[in-house]
Length: 187
Image (cartoon, rainbow, N blue to C red):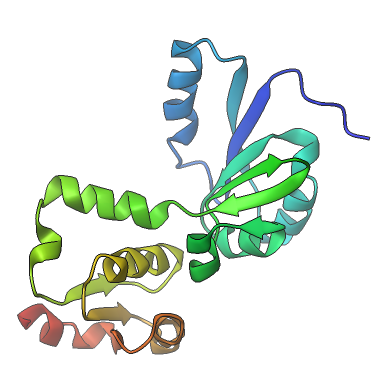
């Protein structure tokens, strides 16, 4: 039987996680509002990640997930929100009634940043170009399509990786090699 932790403990997990500013940001709010808790950093190599998620409940009440563990986190949770299921990736893990649950807020965060930096961007009848086809690109493409972008050019070094996202999202995603981005840039 697991003994409840005396205070709320959460963390960011990734590899490397050393670059993450999450402990600084969340630590500020924890201190400011006098929350009895901590926000740590877990630098977990990929080969150790399955054991980390299996034992998460014994050490933390939840975590944020960064590269390269988002897809593994999705496979590790018992329940996932609709966006996480669509993306097959989780960036937030928590426990509810003993059940490990996951969600994904990356797309909302990306689109929110676009709204702030370029108000009205989604009212333009223009295609989008996304560079890369990793975990972040998955969320960016999802956010763009959810906001009505009709065509997303997805440029990646490895065309096969971009094609995986086309298969996930459908024909509105057009994979291209990095050497071919001049065409979409002209659009």
